[in-house]
Length: 247
Image (cartoon, rainbow, N blue to C red; front, side):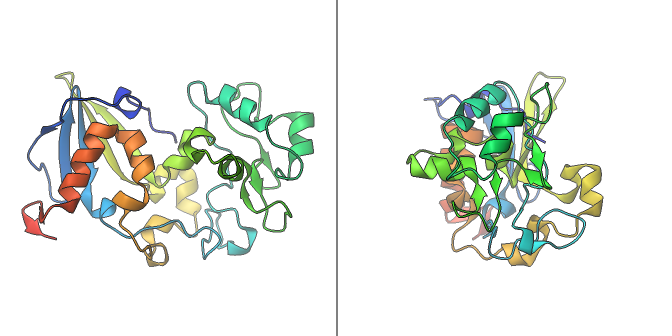
């Protein structure tokens, strides 16, 4: 599920991105070195917001707002060196802040020896504190980041903080790689998507934010796109005209 990170997602380039024409309706195209970003402007300008704990029905085959699982009903896929980072950060958690602290101590936080997924306990990720946990409901890693006054992006697996942003990579024969950035869709969950009773990016309940996605997910988008491309798409979103039409 985790998009492949590009070099521009971790490097901040000083040179301005090349501005290229719009290729299709609703898509902004920005070339940055060997990567051509195709950005779904309609989603970036929408007021989608995460409503976990405020009406989110989860990703199970039945609406399950009461479980408070959100999109954490499956273990998080880990890429690159995330397993080592996750294990290290889990070591900072204690029983007061991490509901499954003892389970993690006895059986680890990974699903198996490949360490490619976080472990699932009682139907959800081991790091998900349930609604009745005295130490606070939600991702134990996210909560710990807040206590440490650090970015949750540095604590959580990338697939967790990237949702609902989806990046698909497409290599061209010319050597240019196209990165399509859009909202996650039901099909992106694979076979599980067919049985999901609810998908937040498809439902009006989640489009209630007081800011556009380009602003509310600014930190996440800049990390994915790199500063150069992010600043350019911000400029376009804030301009009088986008795609040649008034906002």
